[in-house]
Amino acid sequence: MMTKKICFIAVFLSFLSMGYAQKIDRQVKNGEKEYYVKIETSYGDMVVKLYNETPLHRDNFLKLVKEGVYDDLLFHRVINQFMIQGGDPNSRNAKPGQMLGEGGLGYTVPAEFVPTLYHKKGALAAARQGDGVNPEKASSSCQFYIVQGTTWDAERLKSVEQRMGKSFTAEQAEVYAKIGGTPFLDGDYTVFGEVVEGLEVVDKIAAVPCGPMDRPVEDVKMKMTIIER
View (cartoon, rainbow, N blue to C red):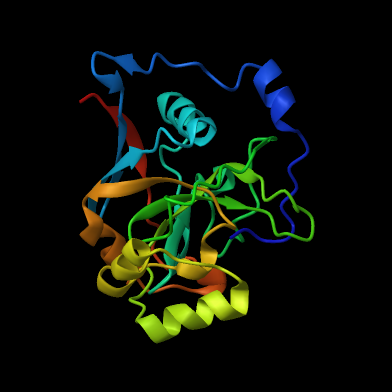
């Protein structure tokens, strides 16, 4: 999801030792607490639920939201029928035409692949460096994308299984057929949340005119806040 020039130099252990991973009280009366984040844009608001099954990504995302890291950043890479990507720190106050997609915060987050969490439409996932320089598939410290994708019938999905060595459950196949998504990304990028409100905003942003490097011609800024529920 990220350009090859991105370079992240720290490992997660140093990320922990520097205090980037903030422990959050997750216990509630009837089990684990659920966390939601509102993403405000000029095209409307989205609410994403963060998965407790991916605690490293969840806690990192919450920490960055609390610190205001995402406020006024751009959705800098938008591809209709694929995904909308944002979170590059270099996108704040970026000049028109400036190349984006290489920024980070100096660390990565270890991959957290959970078979039951997949790239259906509305999935929130972590961008990362390519396999050639990142065989562990570690995630970017801050860049993320939200899936739009397309629908997949049984024949198309079977071709993905055969060509890429992936397998899909009956439930996943039904979701990809009815809702859509990007099944070819499953198992390669960490999915750590999903849009639970405002899914239509993904479609609106995905449809904006774009220039070079899939950057929207008019900036699409974001602001994030944690929702208490």
